[in-house]
Length: 499
Image (cartoon, rainbow, N blue to C red):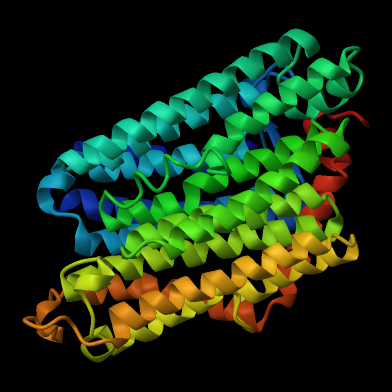
C-alpha cells in the first residue's frame, strides 16, 4: 500500500517543483491546477483503499516500525487528506482570478503546492518527529505565502505569525525530546503501550500538557490564538481561504490523534482542561467577531470560535462527542474556506472589506449574495445545512453527559454567530452602498470573477449535500470516532502485532 499513501504527498511536491521551474505566467497556474486535480485523484484512491481495507500503513524503505518512517491512514486521516485536496483544488481555481502575474513569477504556486504537501504529510505521518518535520514544511510555506507580494501589513502579520508559531514548535519539540527520553520511541502506535507502561505517569502528564500547548497554538485555542486574527486578514484572499480551511485543523487533528491514541492515562485531568479551553475558545472567538467591522476580521475570529466546537468533541471524550468533532472538522473546512472566497469576491465588486464602507451587493451581485447565505447559515447552525448537524451532535453529547453548562455555551455561541453573519449580510449586502459610489456588475473583472464563482458554488453545493443527506457522512464520522476511541486496529496495522 506504500504508493497509495505516498502519492497524495508526492503529487503536490512534484507539482511544486514543476510549477517553480515554469513559474512565469501563465504556465505556472495551469501546472498548479493540473497538479491539484491529480492530488484529488490520489486522495480519492487512498480513501477507496481505506474504505475497503480499514486502517492501512506503509513503512518507508522497508524499515519496520517503530524504527522507520511510517505512513498510516485510518478514516480520520483519509477524510482529512481528501478534504485537503478538495480545498486545494478550489483554491487553485480561485487563484486564477486573484493572483497577479508578478506574484505568480515569485513562485506563488510552488509555495502553495508545498503547503498542500505539508498539510497532507501531517495527516498521514505515523511518528512524532516526522509530524514536526511536516509542521516545519507548513510553517515555511505559509510564512512565505503570507508575505508574498510585499507590503507593511503583510510583513508585520508575517513576523507575528512566524514568531508565535516558532514558540509552538519549540514547545512541541521539547515535548518530543522528553517523551523519547521516557519511552525510547516516537512511533505513535508504539507510544500507546510505551506511555501506558511508563513508571513516572506524573511526568507523562506534564509532557501531555506540553503537547497540548504546542498543538493548541497551531489550532488557535484560548488563550493562544492571538496570532491568527493579527495575520489572516492581510494576504491574498486565496491564501486566507486555504489558511482558514486547513492550517488550524492540522493542530486540531494532532490533538485528536495524540489525546485518543497516546495520552489517555489521565483523562480526568487533561480532558477537563480541554473542556474549559474549548468553551473559552468558543466564547472569546465569537465575542471578538462581534466587535469587528471588517469582513475578513470577522471571519478570522470565527475560525477561533468554531475551533472550540471541534476540541470540545475531543474533550467530552464519548463516541457521540468525537463523532461530532470529526463531522465538525470536515464541515468547517468547506464552509470557512468558502466564506473567505466570498469575502474576496465581495471586495472585487464593492472595492473594500470594511462593512462601513461597502453595501448594495444584494443588487449588484445577487448570485454572490445567495452563495454567501449558504455557508454563512451553515456556520451559524441553521437547519438543515451541515453546520446544524455538527452542532447538534456536540450539544447532544454534552446533554447526555448532563453537562448542561457546556450545552448552554455551545448554543449561546451559535446565537452570537448568527449575529455576526446577519451583520455581514445587513451591512455588505442589504444596505445601500455609501453615497458617492454605486456598485454595478461592470465593476467586477469580466472574466476572472466568473472563474472565481466556480469554487464558491462548488463548496456551497457540498454544504447543501452534507446538510440534506447527512446520514452517510454521520456514519463515516461514527466509524472514525470508533477508531479513535479503540485504536487497536491502528496499532496492529502499524506494528504488525496484536496490542
